[in-house]
Structures are given as C-alpha cells and as structure tokens.
Length: 292
Image 1 (cartoon, rainbow, N blue to C red):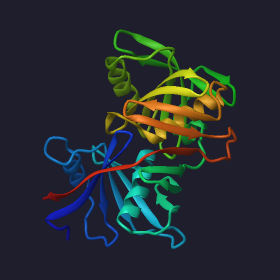
Image 2: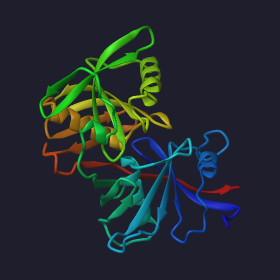
Image 3: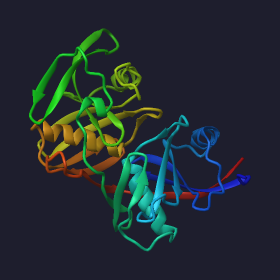
C-alpha cells in the first residue's frame, strides 16, 4: 500500500528537471495518476519526468530505471535522467560503484560518475532505420546524406504547409531532427513541435529536435519532448541530433550541444555498432515529501 507521504528528491540535468523516487522496496504503487500529480507544476512538485529507482530484474545489473513523462506515460529512455539517476544512487548510498549497469525499457545503459554533479553515460548505439524508430517513411521523398537518410515531410509550420527535410533516429526512444539554418522562434518550436509530436507517421509519437549547427564542433538545440512539451534540455535529443549531424558529415565526432538549460557533450565515432557517449551535469535541488 502506498504511504500517505512519499519522500522524493528534486533534481535537474542542464535544466531538464525530475522528481526521483526510491522504490527499491516496492512500497510505492507507481500509477499514471500519481505521476501526473507529482509532476504538476501548480499542485505538485513539478517536473518534466518522474524517475523511479527499482531493483534489477537481472542480477548482473545494479538497478532498474523507470521513466514517466509529466503526462503519466511510461517511456523507454531519458538521457538527462540517467545522469541524475547515477548521482542519486551515489548520494543516497544505494551503491558504492562509480559505474553502474541500469535496466531501462530500451535496454541496459551504463552511467559513470566522473565527479560531483558530473556524469558520463554510455547510451548504447543510435538507430537510423525508420521502421525501428518507428517512422513510416512510405511514399516520402528520400535522400542519402552521408551515412544516414533524410525524408521530405509536409509539415504545418503555422502559416502554411512546408516540405521539410527531416532526419529520424532512435536512442531507445523516437526522435525527429530538423537541421535549421538559423535559430527559431518560440512560436515555431511550439507549433511545429506540437504538430510533429503526434504526427501520424510516428506511431509512438516522437521527440522533436530543432538543431542549428554553429560549426563542426558546436550546435544549438531545442527539443519539444513528447508528453512534456519543450524542456530546457533533453539528453537523448542531444544524442539523436548530434549523431544525425555526424552521420550526415556535418559535425565532428565530439560535439558540444548548447541547450537553453546548459551544455552537454556528445561523442560518437560514426560506426553503427558503437555506443553514443553523453557527458553533462546532474544536480540535486532539494529533498521533500509529497502528501497524498
């Protein structure tokens, strides 16, 4: 039975904010309704996602990591959350390991605590195959750009429908990336993000990345996340955008990704079998209790 008061930790990774719950003993009944209450920014603690620490299903791993968006939907992966997860279990002395193996719906990831409030994560390989994103590319114009394809997708941009070249990728969760020649307005991000998030060609909905490349080593990125809207940072979004840029030959193998909430570093050698590495901050904001 869920207790009437639930201890939680408020954390953020480059401004992407989380409520983190220790449920190793299974005493909290995790429901969509509970998540929505805790994530509510007016009546709850407020968060982009709620993260749950649970025991692993496989004894060779250290923990199981569950992720819920603010709308109550459980999702496969969250990169900024993964760093906060690692910081949390060390701060709470739930492990003495600096590097841990963590089960997610997308597979096992490997966060490594580098120093206080700074974590590096092996996010696993990126997937560009549209069927596995998943993305229905049937009937769309396609062009090969380096090691990955782009697709021409009709998108309502607010004033009219425009045919945009988009890249698609999965980091265990689905992403669509728009490579833009200049920074975009808040209205554009909100309108196009809302339109693409629930576009019928993405059967599981999608996270929408707005990428503006500054040079081969640096890019700006805004991400409209499914179930959360635009967030100040999105770790898997940074991985997806950076790897798309690398695969297309537009970026070097180590990229600084500048978000509205901070900066992440993404590294990938361009091989489809190689992992994507992400480094960035993981910070505890405060501890609290949520009253049911």
